[in-house]
Length: 328
Image 1 (spheres, helix red, strand yellow):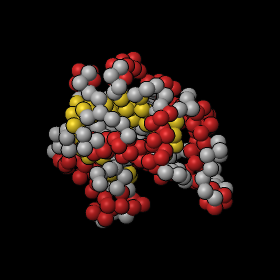
Image 2 (spheres, one colour):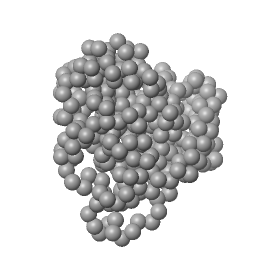
Image 3 (tube, one colour):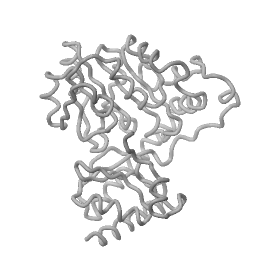
């Protein structure tokens, strides 16, 4: 099992700070997530049904009906390697570690963003996150479509994890789903802030979706999860307001990190990433102050999520200044 952000209970136990006293910025989730309407009793009492409107809401949101609801994109990440042929797999690094972990049984080649284009013609499968987690690197739609075409001509596959794209969706390949050799993964955990609902979508050709559905089995998404997702995907006004708010808050976070002397961060609206030679020391110093951010070892770096409110913003600014003084 790989380590992820959001391990707040572990940090609380380690530092002896009660859960309620933490500012958790480790996950990159929208801190003001979608306000799910109250659950009807049947969401708990009946098995999930596919004609409840979720697929229709998802089709309207993604611009395609070539989709399969799954229990978070993680379920698909783990299942896809058994269903997609090809020995030579190129994976973006640094990147979301679960992708590399899932493809470890093949011949994985770890490529930086600058190396991916040259790697496409020697690969059977290319796996990337757009925008990338944790670096925030973005790949334009034209570039991705070129890579997909070069792979598909040889029977290859392009897998694009768009977990963080909802706040700025202009480069999404979701509306093009169904093309041979293209898989797009989406999640309700980040932009919608519904990580606990465990709802994601695989946008892919019909044959692969059928195989994946058979591999995952019936009722892959719970009734409460389907209820939350259906409402969130259909609420266009909430989505519009959330995108406007997140754009401003993402810019604010970038400015705060720059103003403290950490350098110029990168990343989408939901998080900012910084390489820093003393990332581990800064992470530890912030944790002693009850501020949890995400630490990466290679390269040494930190990822900061958005504070939920004005006291959180003030606490982050003060904590950063104190931590930087402490580590020298």
